[in-house]
Length: 380
Image (cartoon, rainbow, N blue to C red):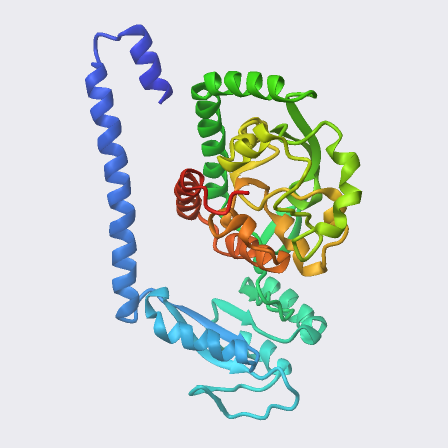
């Protein structure tokens, strides 16, 4: 790329720019074709018993059984399991899923001498970790690759992955998406779409600023501290839809809360101004949050940002909705919005979004949001 740039800048007579474009395109195509062909040839070889790696599996747990079943289903991986080591002492098996059981942990050093091993997989309960540490050190001495199962805990949703932080190898358990590429794409889309929306809607913003200013006394914008990713606080912006002293009146209206849970929702809230009711009907009061999206406090799609005092009242399982950045719209808004009176149901929708997140899901929610705004579904 550097050479092509220099060639373009200096317009070298010996190499045409069109040639550079074709050369680059063909090279990329050829490299991709090479990778695909190599993958196909390796898969074909392994299906015919070639290019395989010998392995020993340590442990006779349910996880071991599942691991061996998956290996039988995918011979193209090229993993040939020679036998199993029983993590119990003394060994209680002669065969495990048709594979010979060579004994307990004490048998491993001798097997390293007699079997042509490439891999040793440790799928043992967590109480065995201290016992397998010297065996892993012995594998290191012999140059045998080892893998240790990360199923130490009976977790419902968290996925594990390994990473190195400050030269310390870590096993990380995470309930939020770990697809870094997609998360980066999500942020890029947030910046692009929020920037375009702010530019395109500039005349609308000006009209709404004048409408709010002339309709009732008080500031045009409503500022409020909200919580986003993992409880970080930020200042959320809205067009003001209530009287200027709305916050002071809130405590007197707590008894009329129609939402079950820490959030406050009231259909006929007396604090809402006539202009504010119209703005809420078409969700126009939320438009200033495009600035929050551009700034990085929020995303276009994600769980709605709660108040800090609401978060203090959350149950432990409800706090997981803060594990992704808050959004301008979410599943709650396109599935009933203010018609949903149960905060637990609202939270379950947010968790369903987190557990099933993808760029495709974000686009679906954005499209449904446009329909919900125009049809005024659930808006009050």
